[in-house]
Image 1 (tube, rainbow, N blue to C red):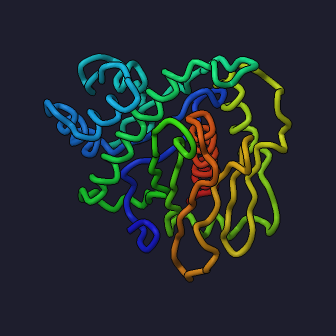
Image 2 (tube, helix red, strand yellow):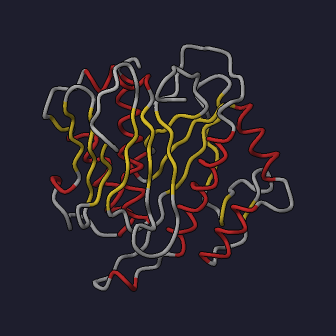
Length: 266
């Protein structure tokens, strides 16, 4: 379990150029297993998501340069031995004055593709990876559905990440992480400066708590509880995360946290 142990990294999250994409560094052995799983003729979760959301046909990993429910995921040159770098371009929904008229098809396709990928990554996290001193920081779980709470996102923060969180000043924010979320959100809705920087917030509190919030009805990620289990990680749970745009914006904030921790040597 990530919240109890330091586990070699199955995958790592990062922020793409201009905060317009999410990057996922995946151990080669795990990615090969995902390719094998996706080669099966029937995959219950894939079929369920496609039917529920009327998604495009799923392009299997290895069939074309881009894969997912449509061309969602692609490969980038990896800078780390034994890991492949996958990029997910953030969708553009072309928000209009009436939010209900936005083009959500690509957004749901992106969320559903990541939903499927992270589900497999969790399933395969028992693959034996040699201890290389590079430990998993988070695990993300996505819910993809239409309607209220349809963009929910649960994040397990690993034991490995706790020392970095504990090093953050009490009652402090991060403008850099907030700006990643702001740029990602504005890219997806197709409008700049419709919200203030303060609407995209990451907030640290001792001994190790972090909260993230984005535009919406008190929309964000918060610790499931505030009981400090010494030496353990914890889980972030969503509140009023109703759309893929909110979901993916928060996921970019989590990726920015991971990048900041990695840069600090964790």
